[in-house]
Image 1 (cartoon, chains in turn red, orange):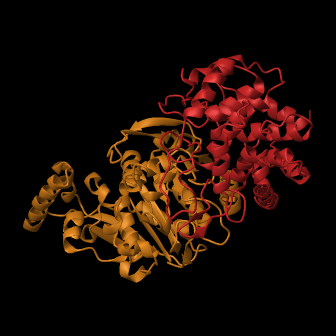
Image 2 (cartoon, rainbow over the protein chains, first blue to last red):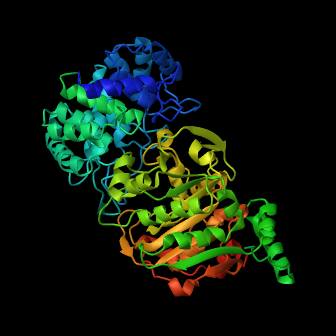
Length: 287
Length: 345
């Protein structure tokens, strides 16, 4: 384990909110599922005791498998990330099963074909929040969660893959999920491109889209090297056995003396996952 | 400086009665409409500025100092500046300029703010660090030692809606916004391919937390963009607006439009009046921007005769902003009946 990983893990452990999980930032005292899941994955194999955090996460999941944000009464997209996390950690099998069942039931809203946007609005993926359209990030995580759960050939996975391919930007790569508006092409973004590729990684028919997506990451990430972009890109490039050295160097340079990346929990935990992957550890997003 | 009060003349009385009838006709309560016709004139400041290198601190200070209620909130208070930092595109003026943000920080501090926070929640791109670094805002924040809060991932609380046009009863808002003594909306002067124009009210969409509503904040779109804008604005009730119109954007805004050297900054404590003035400067009829009339029962002012232009006059800074063909109607003079209903004559 490198010093950078150990330092970052110590930062995460010290930032843990007693009795719950983690907020997005160290200063943020409200715990959320997303940074909590990434942090649990980043601390796997350390001496950190996950029991109370897993209990807190399980408490957010309703009997039917829906995950709610604390204080909220609507199902949240992070259900898929919870499944990915529990699969990787091999924890809470009952919660996992009910959440998978819910994810299979939970469908995005569809629309009618229109010239205004260049996508197929009839395809069903997953939304960020109930009763809305499907977008790249929740759809890709939904597909990945089901693949890791042994449901690679499920119809929901197949349709999610079609949706991701449909939403690809015209030049390659992905943004939040809209290739063009009113006839004008919209550009790809690093974060969405990396996440879309997690969902498509094992689809042979997507070879061309994957190649274009990786090219987007290799070009854009060094130009706009944020902690989030670097961590997600490294994890993605690692899945496809592409060189990551330059990206890893850039990520190291941005680490702060306290071990964090700008005191942001989710960036720090994703950076740990990226560094672990390129140092011989598991890649949390690899099927 | 106090605003000028408007005496209740016979003509006002007639307007008041007409508005009351209209209020009933529209299915709303009469009281808010009556109340708004009793309001004093609203002041909106227009400053001519042709460069981001100008002394913008003095201009913004002058603007804030003009409004005693705003000045009171700034002194010893926590001020949250909410610029428009939608994404990064090196070739287009998408965002509120860094010089405007830096000047607003300095002005607030000089006027006695205890803490100034810059906060934004981009609607399309989760990578706020990238946006801050590439736009140069990050350098400003470091130089000025100002805290930035990503409103997409801040702690959040549910709040009952004041206007409830969306019928959703409540939205979750970031606690940074809810805890501020003064929220300042700092939009870019831009046309918008769905909303017509994106100004100080539309800019508040960025206060909606992505962690709850996603990227884009599509949930609210299903309940109406205009209705959502109004519900957000009436509920968080921002106290001031500073519109960056030194360089604006026309055509396919908010992302793919063309730069316009419009050489203007617009400020005020009534955001509907600020946006109405900004629209007129863009040669757009504010009555045609569907979210503005929704603000009328909640203290918003559209009617030009009820807005006291301070500084420059609209005609002296007006630019003819181009809009996409499907939005052409926002540049057409509304019929008299529409202006009468919306503007109270």
